[in-house]
Amino acid sequence: MMPDATTIFALSSGLPPSGVAVLRVSGPGAGPALTRLTGRPLPPPRTAMLRSIVHPRTQHLLDSALVLWFPGPASFTGEDVAELHAHGGPAVVAGLLEALGSLPGLRPAEPGEFTRRAFRRGRLDLTQVEALADLITAETAAQRDQALAGAAGRLRQRVEAWRSELLALMADVEADLDFADEPDVATPRARAAVAALAHDIAQALGSAHLGERVRAGLTIAVTGPPNAGKSSLFNALARRDVAIVTAVPGTTRDILEVRLDLGGVPATLLDTAGLHESADPVEALGIARARTRAAAADLVLHLGPDPAPGGRTALRVVSKIDETGAAPGIRDGVAHVSAVTGAGLAELEAWLVAWAGREVPQGEPALVTHARQAHWLRAALAALAEAEREADAVLKAEALRAAAHALGRITGAIDPEDVLGAIFARFCIGK
Image (cartoon, rainbow, N blue to C red):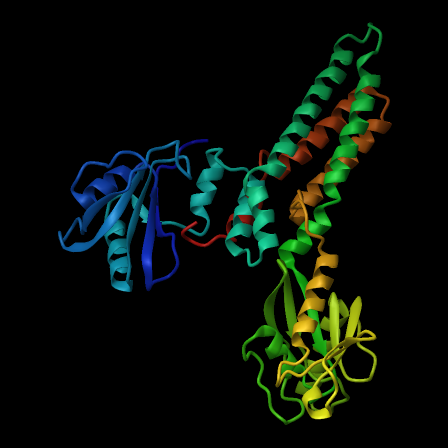
C-alpha cells in the first residue's frame, strides 16, 4: 500500500468531561507534531512520559499530559502514531484539538480512518475490522466474546487456509493443462480435495445464524389490550422509567425500545400500543405497528386473555396481582407478576434468561458473524460445487478461481472502494 501523505488526529476517548482524554495522531507528521507541542525530543517508543503541552503558535500552556510515541510499523495503524493522555475537561480537549489543527500537514480524522489505515497497511483484515466495530458496540458478554474472537483473526485464519488450499488445487489442475499428453492424475485428486474443502466451509457457514443472533440480539414484544399494565411491566423489566404510565387507556401510541442483557444474550424489549379497534387514526397506526413488530418478534409477552399476536413463542402474563391477590410465579405456562410490588418479576426474569439461552446457546463463539461474510462463503460454496461437477480442466480451474475470489472478498484482499467505505463508516471519528 502507498503510505498516506497526510497526518490525521482525533479525540479517541469518550466526549468530555471525563477523567482522561486520549488524543491520537497518525501519519508522517505525528513525531514532529509531538515535539512541537512539547518542545522536547520524542520519548522512547511505547514509554509514557509526563510533558507540558504548549500551543505551538501562542506558546500558551494547555495541559500537563502523558505522551506516548509508537513509531511505525509497530503501531495500530502501521504508521507513526503519537498519543496524548490529557485531562478530560472540555476546555483542555478543545485547546489540544485546536493546537493540533494549527500544525501544517495535520487534519481531523474522518470516521473510521485510523482503522482504515490499519487495514490498508495490512495490520487488520476486513473480518477483524468488522469484529472491532462489534467490540466497540458490544453490550453483553456473548457479544464481547464473539467480537474478541473475530478481532483475534479467527475467521481470517480459516479463510486464508481455505484460500491457500484453493491456490494449490488450481496449480494442480492447471498442471494437467500444461501436460495434456500425460496421464490425468491431478484432476481426480483435486475433486476429492474440493469436496473436503466444501464440507469444511459449509460447517463454518452453519454458525452464521448464531453469529447474527448474538450481534443483533433477540426481540421481545410486550402486547395486550389498553390499560393492561404493559408499560408498567416494560419499565419493571427495564429497571427504569422509560414508558409513561397513566390510568388513561391508549397512552402508549408509538413503539418504545430498551436493551436487555439476558444472561449474556442481548435482547430488545418492545412496549407496544394497546391492541383494540380504534377510530383515532394516530392510535390505529400505533396499533398496526404493534401487530407488525409482534409478528416479527422472537417472543411475545402477552397481557390479557385473548390470543397473543404473532411471535414464534408467546408467554401469557397475568399482571397486577397486587390487586387480585394471586400468588406470584409461573404456573401452567402463565407468569403471574406485579410491576408495582415486584412480586413474580424475579421468576419472569429467570424464565427469560433460560429462554434466551435456548435461543442462543452459549459455547464457542460463532465463526461467521456478518451477513457479508456469509454471502461470500455461499458464493465460494457455489463455485466449489461447480468445480466438483465440471470434468473439463479449464472450466474446473475457472470455478476454483471464482471460489478463491469469493474468499478474498471476505478478508478484503479483493474488494471495491464502495464496500470498504460502507464498512468503515460504522466507526466513530477517533477509531
